[in-house]
Image (cartoon, rainbow, N blue to C red; front, side, top):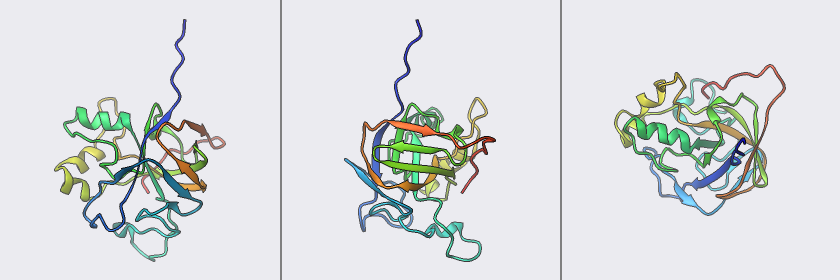
Length: 188
């Protein structure tokens, strides 16, 4: 008899405490709930806003649309980092939402995740930065490396808020795929 797979869900949510992080830190604190603001991001988070605020991403005009409003990472990816010798807990790589039971890395660009009362459209992979090595030496290279099955180990996925709302641990995740042909996620 086939077993029913547990639904994908949120296991933790994170945001920055105002004034607590320096530009060289990535760890975000756990929260009981986060609120997503349509077309902006996570309320109270440093990356919330209509333009990108990640200075190492700028190679031209500074007013680029923010395609990095929400950072998601799976518990399964964190386990892969643990297998590679890096103990990573939810929130420690700067993600806003930690998931279980969904292969975020294999979803196509434009997939929409419905979580709680919010909807997040995926824009691409998070690009690892130097802060990872300041936190755990060699972690940036591990993020760029391929896993044992050839899968990418980028540090999670990024998205934009299509519908604002609250998200909390335990919320289930439903995925709507974009029309075919699907385009794979690329670094943003």
